Image (cartoon, rainbow, N blue to C red):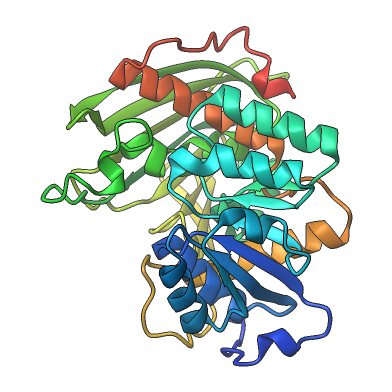
Length: 377
């Protein structure tokens, strides 16, 4: 077995980040749990600073700003969007408000990062992307998993054909929903449920495993609890370019249990495994077939940096710094999207998520996958 280990980035909490030379100034919409983790990640990212935050409650915004060393706080989202002290807006509201505020940010000409899901429906995601294109403005859905070095290495290996033709990939993701609190956002009828919460982590793997393929078919079944999808099994089929066999993505997501959360991509010459938790990937294992029952394994380790904080709201959130770096790089290059997670990626995943929610929950007005042009934008 060969073992490659990247050095863990050495970082420290910067108490005076606003004194950096020309940092990328972030404005944060929301003072919630994910926003708090993102603000922490900004403080440990060179070349970035959180300069403003807004919440519906001005007092909460002020407390958030004090906690994270942010200069400005507001009780109105428009104040952050329109602030000349903000270079890029991060939208971390509940998902049912993503579309509204992302649209307002883009109309104001502000580069915008929207926490996933970008919106609740494919049509709304397409509208935002069309608006970003028309206004020549940066827009990215916050699929931070794609920004990790292990994911970049995986995409390189797949592109090199080291694993041969990819046959299928399998993944799982689950965490126990708070069943004793029906007011939790996870139970919101429009924006709650397991698919809109974590399903995209698995759905996005299709475009990693089959980057040049055409989405062909989505099939899903599952259970519903309190009006939202609770456990889901999905199979997605891809028509591969110049290949005889279709590629398959199969995954399970659930709010009933904390699952292993491992990803396997199987090719005709070997397989790649992202060890748990694959949405915060630190270890990639690549096994190359040497004959039936014989493999050569190569392990790639990409450890997270040393952690200057004791508490995060979500495990592995220090990894947000990878996405913050990618956004900064894209903006400096004058791009309107991020090559780690493009508009095409967002559109295809939105289509898959739409189909799953429609099939499991019965929202209706499902998309025609075979004829949809959404994934060819």
